[in-house]
Image (cartoon, rainbow, N blue to C red; front, side, top):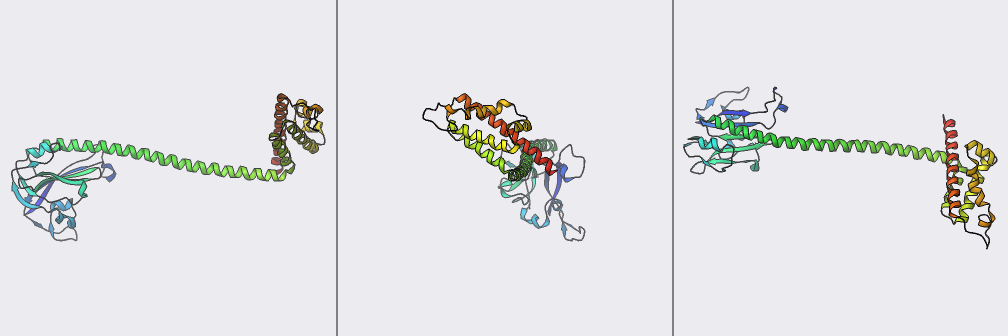
Amino acid sequence: MMASMNAFATRSSSARTNSRASWRGGLLVGFLEWCEPVNGRIGAAGGDLHPLHFVVPREKFGGMGIREGAGSTVVLLDSDEPFGSYLRSCKKWAATMQRGVLASDRAGYALAESRGHEIVAYVEHLGAGAIYWLPLSDRLDLLADAATEVWRAGQAALDDVEEARHVRDQIALTTSSYVTERARLGAELDRVRSEHARFMEDHPRLQRIRDRFHSAQRSTPAKALDYLSRMLELIEEEFGGRKKAEAALSLRPELWSAVTGPANDPSLGARHEASDQNPVPPDRLAGAQSSAAEILDRYTAYLREAWARRLR
């Protein structure tokens, strides 16, 4: 005698094709019964045929330890088992098994035993799906209710997994976008730095002017005025005088005077230190620094425009 199997399966109600991707956490129920052995051939393979070969590979089938038997006692091992009502309805069993062979040990376990502690019901969890090995009862309505409950629970869990996968995919996409944008910005920064280096190499006078401006920021008030005044002298040399520089850079006359006025005031000692020199008033120093910064910006922009035209 050999075990035979009938099957009851559930799948996603939205699935309309045979595509494997349309199955979401499927459920299969195998019923263990007994029948005469069948000899035959499947394609080029010969040997005994067994209904379970449609579910369990031949090389694993023997490991299930299916044995012929009969009994009327089904002892439920977990009162909260969704198939509990169905198993209690079973008035008899016709086969026992020792273990599952499709899932790992932790994902497979007995649901019910005989009076002699032989396994008569077993479940194997495979990913989001499951296979139940159960005795056959005429209460298929209870079976359908339990299968639907298990399937819906699996769908809820699967939805959580899919939501987590979606979030993970979004993180990966965000990370990828960040890496791409960071690389783009890095390349742009390299281009700007390289262009600036070439620009400064072509304008050594500008570097000297910038050096004097920055030296003024680190000096005493009187010395700062001297550095700013000598910065303007370099710009005058570029254009051949103050008037021509102001015209070329479109400067208001008061900007230049805000620097040269306090710098040339003998009482402030910017040009020549004296024992009786007065302290530089903060407002005059701030005005000189602000005006010098604006003049430097105009001069730099003027050079950049001319440099860009030359490169075209």
